[in-house]
Length: 403
Image (tube, rainbow, N blue to C red; front, side, top):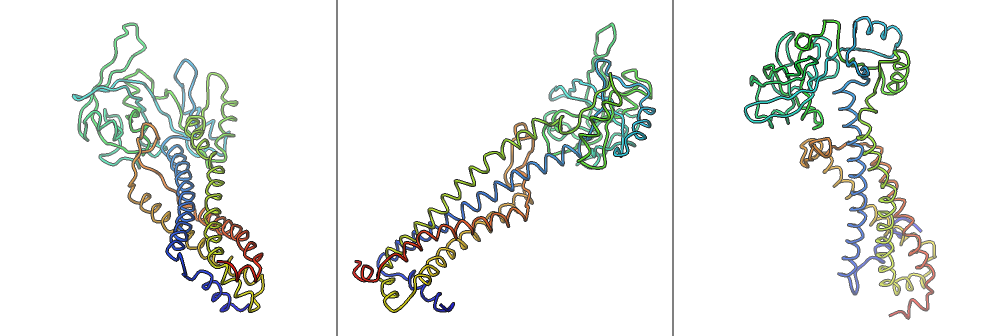
């Protein structure tokens, strides 16, 4: 059969006679069903991929990839020498920076809260805090300046230039906390409430004097490697090399609950995919069966004038593919529109204390769109086979006598 004849027969089978309004409603429901299924699957995949990409980005850029600390003594002596030895022994390590970390209380006129004060050397900063500052600047060398998270600043009602009191326990016989006054030099936003709410950055040299550390003492080392693939192997080898009392923790261990949560969200995807497949297939089968029932008389006429079973089958399949393709294109278009709007304007916000992020993350992966498109059209094609086969089984005499 020529293409023009196939199109004519397909249109004839779908032309409106009795119950034309009912056919339009059924057809529209099938298109909407395929569109919703395609859209739901694409948006779900974009959100899960966005969560993984955003959290991995924040976890590996805002914090170090490997941390080196000590058991019990909470102090590393002669860290410059240790850093040089580590760099020589481990070629995958690209940067090392010392830090001094201490749990303290911070208070303003508005409120008081417990935080983690992390003191770094601004000249050796490798974790990207400077890039996250949205107001002010990083703490200057040997000053009482600090950088606090946006969420903490809002809680304490602080702005750049404001003053805060910091209470820290000292390892002394008096057991009285040390009280120091700090100035807000900057406010940062990491996108992760876990950090914005509790981590405050200060100058390492200034804090060493307060806690009575020598210039070559710190509480830990931040380490970056040349590739994400080398993080776990380097961490294990480094811990074995340094031995007790040193311990190493990589970014995937520090944020294990976060990545486990993402993996848990991905597990239902095959089930969701199966349900969407069933719904889409049933919609297509239903509309084609309705079409066949309404056009039995027309099929009889076509067979009486010599139309072959193959031509009837192709006509039915082409009608089903047209419906499925329309629904797939609509679903892809809506999902793309939503993804771009959410990615650029962050329309949907999240509770950062629960979801780690303040806005719903979106990652647009072209491969996912191609995969879902191919899968959707394949399901539609398979769903058209059963109604088409039923149509070919209708005999000419029964079709002409059908009422």
